[in-house]
Image 1 (tube, rainbow, N blue to C red):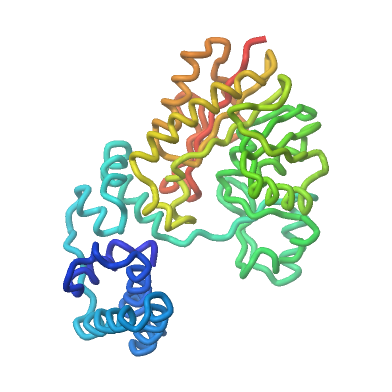
Image 2 (image 1 turned 30 degrees about the vertical axis):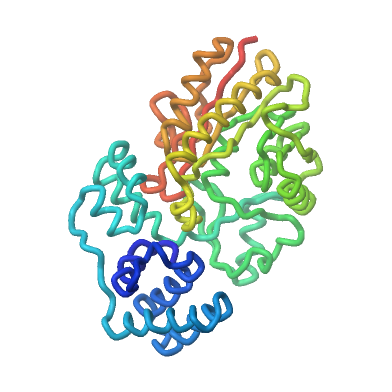
Length: 383
């Protein structure tokens, strides 16, 4: 429903007498759910879709809300689905066809062109496969255990984990033993791209939920894993207790005030707009705004500047996002390098060449590489 929200709204709006914008947001979602069942699912009879939606509306807003939902969905059921006019390759046409916010589509057309944007929007409307990464033990042992239990297993793109045909991760063999974590290949590639030397002391500044921390802890001497949110830090600790090596240690800390002495390596996976993860988070496209982007860019700059203070001479700072927006990625790094001449970009061959930008940064694009989008830069402090 979330992936098709704009299309569903276009079908429902003409059936609402006083305007779609005036409908309570919770009733809007109930109507969207009913409309999706009526127009996109063959297994749900029309009367069942309407009755379920009416029951939800009654629980939410009483008899009046239930009557309203009943009337709108019965009109839709009688009239059949209406499609928002599209057929063009401009921003409005693509936004209508793929059910995305217009402002984002306009940005991506400038960045990726018409075909690239079309491919990206199409990717965002697909359901990604579940991917797991080995945590304790090796990948081959995990693969063998899964196959022995009848679980279908395929290598993820770029050999970054295993794609599994699964129900729920906790039901897979090896989960309680901490043999794996659920993690998109892009995050696994980020840990590979960081290319931190074995035996290093690492500060993972924005660590929750912990998949990246666990990957770093496989070879590090110690990983201090921080998160500003106590609730997220508890989740981080639970994941580390289940699947970590024992060399990871959780703290509640604000990345803008890192509570450490200078250390060998700092990994700063900053809060971002998350536009590279819309296939896995279909609700996110409706929550992001241009104003949020501006706010995040300022926060990222502060996190990046402050984290530089705890990178030891000769040490490494790894900056990363799961965003596709240049302001959060390349532009942010270039601003930092101008303000901090003691740092320089450092290339690595730890990931495939088609995953690296001309500057040598990690640049993963969903529509090109078939996984979540991600960006990272390795920044070396002078000795």
